[in-house]
Length: 398
Image (cartoon, rainbow, N blue to C red):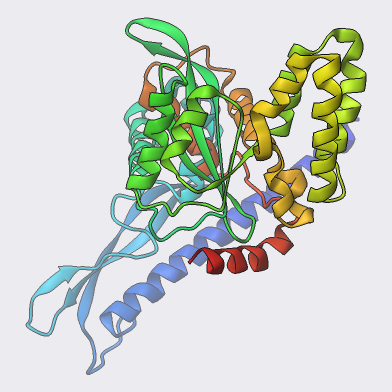
């Protein structure tokens, strides 16, 4: 078996060697064409349009997706119209560049996966070698990610419109005041009029009180976010109070959270019957049928178990708001499951880290997981029916 696999292995190595050689040759040809265009003439060519001269070449080692490669880059002086000269700079290989974007993405992928600097260098050693990825290089790349997060966190939202905004929180372990504690991360997820989900904001708070949720809403408003057509939330008291800042916006209470609340107030033996009655509300053919099922539920369970009826009435009409939207979107907008799924992915991707050392470090990793495609956000179900509905509704509002 080993003997039969040797020729195949050798063939693959030869193919890889040839491929890398042709890549290097193609890059060096590109460098030559680039300096020829900058100087206005080829090597040893005398023309009236010549704008400078060559003066040797230098070797630069660059880490690509195929590993570290040494490239020969031509040097030259470009003469301007006023007679001054400047050093030729390649646009294909900018000054001080030591890695291609794929190399930086590989490093960030390791960092976002919870690997520290030493282990990143060990893991990427076959790709970049030992000399081309120092601890400071990893820190600089991670530093750029933190800068991107800071810019994203304070970006202007006045030019963006979201038909639907979901708000929810999940807990993460972070070191605060010299102790590792489980603290809530408050997240906002927007849905554009084309149905595309976008992460709007992340905030780490000490609790989910009205003040902290109010700060999330205020931040979105101050950055110019136009009020959405629909807010999808759970029944958390602090969040409910904070939403008063967005006066006039329709609210959809998460039907899954409400079912759990009803179960908490219902005797165990009666829960299957209660769920059947509840499903008639949530899975009705239209809003009229849902309202009839809602009234029937309230009347029946006010007699069987008054606490269940009161829990349902606490949500009121906000439990049925999704019926005002296109039917194809009902599954996506009647619960906070979209944001719950994102939060679940955040927890899964960060479980390798026992805790985060700082608040900024925690939020930067969460942002990076979405920004660099580690977590993909797709369109909602029924997104094809959303643009026409949103345009019509916003026209009425205006």
